[in-house]
Image 1 (tube, rainbow, N blue to C red):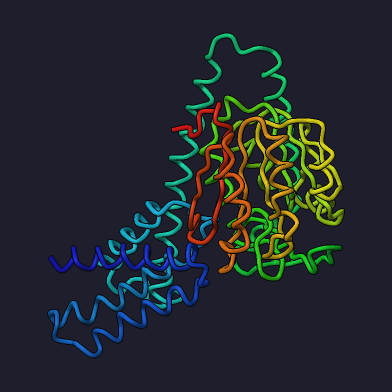
Image 2: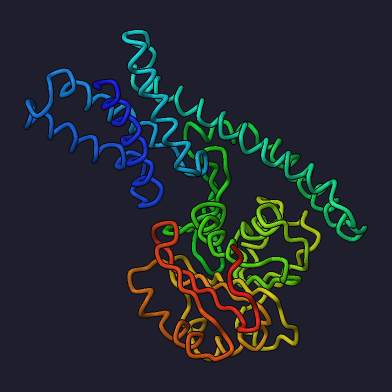
Length: 389
C-alpha cells in the first residue's frame, strides 16, 4: 500500500510540474518549486495525517519527481511519457535505497535516469511507427512519378537539413546544459533571438516565440483539423523562421505549392540560413507587406494560414473587415487564423470572428486555450467538409 501511494506521488509530481512548466509557461524552476513547497508545507504542518513513514517520504518523492517534470516539451512532448518517467523514478527510488547518494544528488540522478529511459522508449515507439508507415506507403499501388519526385525532393531537403544540423552539433549538445543565444536586430520586430535550447533551435522576440517552439505546436493543433486531401496550394502570411512550412511537409505530408509572405528581410534571411528553408523546393517566399499582397492577389489558395505578429501584437490592419473580405475572396477551401494569446485578444480580434461567423459562405470553429494559451479561428467554405477525423 505504501509503495503504491509513493508511486502515485511520483507520477503526479512529474505530470503536475511538466504541465505547469510547458502549458502554463511558468518556467521549469518555478513549476518544480511551487508545488513542492506546498506539499512540503502540508506535511510539515500536518505530520500525523498519514503514517510517519509516508509523511517523511511523500515530500521527497514529490520533489524528486518534479525534477522529471522540468523537462522541456521539446524533449518529451506527450504526457504519457512524462507519466512513465514518474513511474520509473518511483520504482528506482523505492528499490535503490542509498545507492545514488553522492552522484550529484540522489533525487536528481534518479530523475535523470528516469527521463533518459522514457526518451529512449518514446524514440523506439515513434521510430517504429514511422518505419511501419513508410513500408505501407511503399506498397501502395498506383503511386505516380510526380508524387515520387516530390517525395525525392523532400528526402533531399531532409538530407540537407541533416548536414546543416551536423555543423551545429556541439551547440546542440551544449544546449541541453544551458541555452545558447545569438541576437539579431530586426527591421520590424526589434531584437530577435536565435536560441539553441534542449537540442532544438528556436526563434523568439523579447516576449514571444516566433518559430519552432510553442507557436509550432499551436499551429499544428489547427492544421490537424484540415483535410489535406483537398489541399493543393497553401498561402502563409507571416513566415517567421518557417516552422509551419516544416510542419506542413514533415507532419502532414503536404507536397503541393507553398507561398509565404514576410515583410522583414532579416527574418527571411534567418529562415534560410539558420533554419535551412532554402532547401525546400516547393516554397516561394515573397518579401512584401501581407495586406498589400492579399489586396492585389489574382490567385486563390486552398489553405491560408495567417500568423501576423509584431512581437505579441497583431497589427490592427490585419484585424480589419477589409482585410477579412480580401482573405475571403482568395480562399477557396480553408483558412487558419492565429488570434494570439494576449489578455485583450478577444476584444481586439472581434471584427475577425464576427466577419467570418456572419459570412454565409463560411463555417467557423473557434479553438480556445490551444496549448493552454492561444486562440485559433478556423473557417471552411461551406462546400468543404470541415473537419478531418
